[in-house]
Length: 471
Image (cartoon, rainbow, N blue to C red; front, side, top):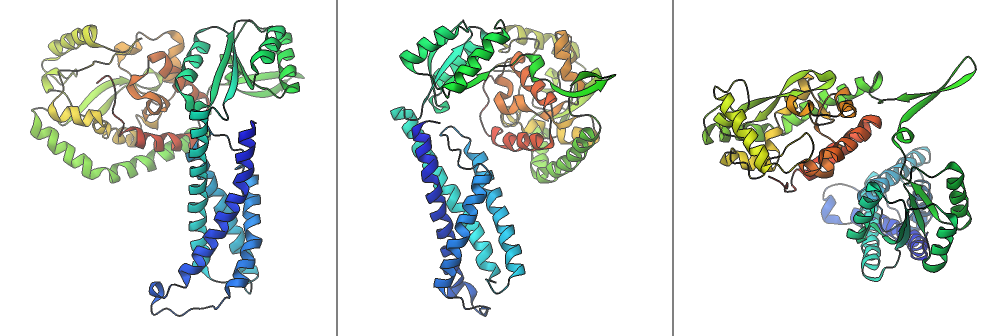
């Protein structure tokens, strides 16, 4: 950890302490505002001095909970929304313990309003203080270079070049690349450290031997250098260890979506899709009317896609194209529509790989341009999820002609139900190349959890209002 990070980590403790005291005092004084409780008798008359003494006992207790929850590992590049959730969680744990304590010892303190108000104020003040500290840290990081980690990249290949480009473009990541080498020679690493200093090393070089890697790991441990490496596909696979006739066996797990995992995901899909249909019903009704009034043709466009186990199914969408240009068997001008689409793909597609994305698509209606921009056209897919042909989260379903262009390893995307949203959509939506989209979806397949589904759904809400490129 850098000195600046140690300083901010240390200063965070007294700041949290003061915020908790401030929250407690704010709740106490709010309870004593007469205008808020007209006609309601006070059930207690607690002196401020005694209340403050209790606060001084309770505040260190919350600091301890924050420490246990890992809230004092304070690097400027941490995700603030995750930190906010952990503050909420830790403060809530503290509240539950306080309530249980008061229940067992009622003479200590008994105002439910003050306790609940102090919890709300506590979450708000602590998160606000941490947000302001992080803003200051990031300003120091960008403008002064304070807290920047000196990074050495080992390996010259596509993956490392992508990482190098990303770090160079985004100062908020908190790294400065001091060198990129193609050798894992310990002598070279020592020379670079002596001349420029090294805080972290990232290795991505398949040709390195275990002996060379072990030497680098030992050197990093001795000199307090963080060592990271980009693993191979096999190293990132989930596995289980078993024994057969005394011999250890390692079984590669393709996905956690087996057995109870599949059941839990289906229950989540049903509940979430019903909630989605109910909450978006006004938008569904208004959009249906707008599509009908804007142009001739059906409101819902059924687009044939390939789902899990390579089975074909219909994806429901609000029609955003002129009906004569829709590629569906229900269109009497299907042959002309397919021909026109192929011409557009050849001239205006902006995606690489088996998928296509037509820029400035002339087939869209006036309403269609708007509803596709904000993904309103995809809301009917909640019914796909409810009926079981899709999941709320998963790889996006592709057309048959796109799937036919898959490489063999791409077909792993067809091992689970396709989703309305997914990791690729919250990471780049339709702007990602297919190979990058595949890698994100493969990570999801191998690392599925119900919490991951919830996170992706929450991120999707924010992504919907971000303007898409390549439209």
